[in-house]
Amino acid sequence: MKSDPNSPTFVCDEYGCHWQMTRIEKIAFHALVKKILPGNALEIGTYKGGSLQVLSEFSKHVYSVDISDEPKKALEALYGNVSFIVGDSKKLIPEFLADMKKQGKRLDFILIDGDHSENGVRTDINNILKYYVPESELFLVCHDSFNPSCRKGIVGAEWKDCPYVDMVEVDFVPGVYHYEAFDTAKPKSMWGGLTVARLLPEKRQGELTVHQSQKGLFDAVHKDSIS
Ligand SMILES: C[S@@+](CC[C@H](N)C(=O)[O-])C[C@H]1O[C@@H](n2cnc3c(N)ncnc32)[C@H](O)[C@@H]1O
Image 1 (cartoon, rainbow, N blue to C red):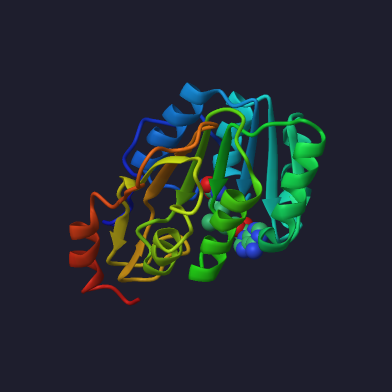
Image 2 (cartoon, rainbow, N blue to C red):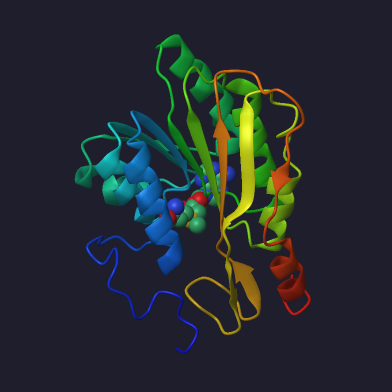
């Protein structure tokens, strides 16, 4: 396989669970989580525990949501600081956030990597922006911002309506073009990419810019992609 975006490598090899991120995303994700050292972290999209193994290592507690009960069954025994939540994030996140508030618990880090449809991603982001009022700095990371549907959901989310959003960079880490099939990706598909947003407890002064620093790259590659 010529187009494997993870091989060769010598970084993050110590993590044993299959991780659906590229080599550069793993490095960036690891660095971000290690820098933030979250008290509480929320992850939407557990899958085989790839991002979870890093969140568990550097966070005090992780809430990990998946629509399937397979991740919980496979991974529960491995992590003492993870609460596995089974269900559709679009439906359960508002109630989850209300419960966190009742218990006086804050979130420091959120990864959205679940339903990758335009509506799925947009709903996950909007639910956070609408139902969570940060009392301290919160980092919101969305995976697969290079995938056309996912990107539409990210760009179309109601970032500007939330006064606590301080910055959004859709292309914090740009994604990749799979010209041949790779893992669950089809040939000629666009995947990967990390969006990073920061929310602050103080209300923003002035207009928010939703940065897409690599829109030119996205548009150029999109012309040759299947979606
Ligand atoms: C791309 S994988 C997550 C990869 C993982 N974060 C990693 O780093 O390896 C997406 C996961 O999201 C889950 N998922 C899809 N739709 C969902 C939804 N509506 N609510 C919660 N989880 C969902 C899938 O079952 C799948 O396990």
